[in-house]
Length: 118
Picture (spheres, rainbow, N blue to C red):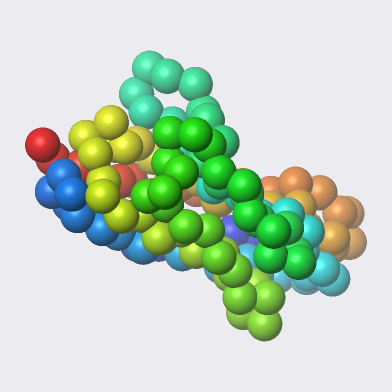
């Protein structure tokens, strides 16, 4: 079994910062691209950022310059540093990863709530 567990969400004032973490565990052979998505109430789930196993990162336009995705391959963990947060960043943030295991599949975390007060 493979699990992705997010942490680090919470309530923050506009202009503040939060750092999300997502740790993968279980029967893992290798991890490919890791991603962060977010979903606000009543809206679709949007890709926020992605990072390859080699460290190449890409961002959605709405977070460029404010959010930074990094990963620690030794710890099977991906991070999302969120700065200059805005009220519109309020959403449930989900971790997603391509993980080679017994079945080799794409996995999701359970999500962590980020609330930005204006």
